[in-house]
Each structure stands twice: as structure tokens, then as C-alpha cells.
Amino acid sequence: MADEGAILVALATYNEIDNLPSLVAAIHNELPLAHVLVVDDNSPDGTGDWCREFGEQNLWFTTLHRPRKLGLGSALRAAMQTSIEKNYCRLITLDADWSHPPAALPRLIYASEAADVVIGSRYCPGGSIVGWPWRRKLASRAINWASRLSLGLPIHDCSGNYRLYRTELLKQLDWKQLQDDGYAYLEEVLYHLRQLGCRFAEVPIAFTDRRAGESKISLRDVQGAAATLARLAVNRVRN
Image (cartoon, rainbow, N blue to C red):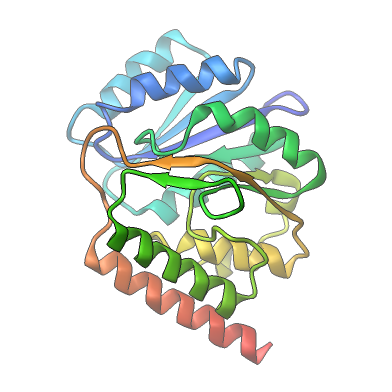
């Protein structure tokens, strides 16, 4: 069990061997008292093997090894449930490709003193995106606009994974309601936390394109996200 007030930083990985070692080191440098959890979906590039060896030498680092690629939403759900089961006070999630700056971690923690969920935001005042073509920026803006409008979310960045959650609120979630195993889980969990009266805050970050490797988002993921947003929007209208 974690000590009272402990922080868990979680990373979902699939083929991130070129990014993960340096990122874990940077996270530990920023938050030396935090624990790090990697949820790895049996990466064929050796990510899981590196995690296994590194964890044997560093007690603050653990890995959840899964048998196959099960989706980002599924990995985040597992990290949330682990943070509750191990009695962590706060859970921080970020992408494993260096798109989210570890230097912003202390600012997320500071902002959580007055909020239940803190977003490392690309779109709040002071936030930015570096290295994306204008078409991708436009598509991302459109997705976030649609999410805010259809789900009633009072934040600028609904689809980013750089977040801090207070586990006290995560304990109140009805996990049966969280159905999406892909990228739309990011909006879905915010919607249900909003229903619980969640207090949100945003901290501006400079989001940069991944350092190495390839994006995991596919057309199927985009289609699934659209279906999930439509389902949640209908549910909001009915309620």
C-alpha cells in the first residue's frame, strides 16, 4: 500500500522503447517521491523487457504486463483502479512519447490543491502545440469544440491525456458506465466525473509531437471516438 498523500504516475505503452527510458528518468527527476506505473500491452519492441529489468533495480517503478494490445482506455482504466487499490492520493497520466513535458508535473500538483482533476492543456490561455501540421491542429480543435458542446465540459482540452486525478473522486465512478477501451475514454471519464460534481482546473503546456516511433491512432479509433461521443451526448440529453 502507498503512503498517505503518495502520487502515482502512469504511462500506457505499446512500442515505446525509444522514448520510455529517458521519459521515466525525467519524471523521477521532477517527482523523486512519486511512484511510476507502466501499463504495457506486450510491446514487441522490447518495452516490456526494459520495464521488467528496470523495475528489479528501482522499487518506485512497477509494470502491469498485459497479454496483447487492449487499447488506451483499457490501460487508463487499469491505472485508475490500481491507484485506488494501492491507496494513492493522486494519479497522474501522460503519454509515453515525450509529447507532454515532465517539467509541468509540479504545476499540476500545485493546481490540484483546489481541483479534483487538473488538465495539462494545449488550448487554455498560454497553451500551445509544436510540430503539428495545420490540418491536424484544426481537427483536434474541432474534436475538442464538439466535446465541450455536446458533453457540457467546462474545459478547453478534453482529449489530452496529461492529467492529474484525485483518487478520492475516482473511487466514486461506476466502472460499468465506462465502456470505451480506446481514445474516447479520455472524454468519457471526464463526462462521468463531471456528473459527480468534479472541480476542474487547467494548466497550460507546450505540447510537442512525439520524439520517436509512430502514432497509434487509427481510422478505427477515430470512428469509435465519434460513436462514443454521440452516445454520451444522447445520454446527457436524456438525463
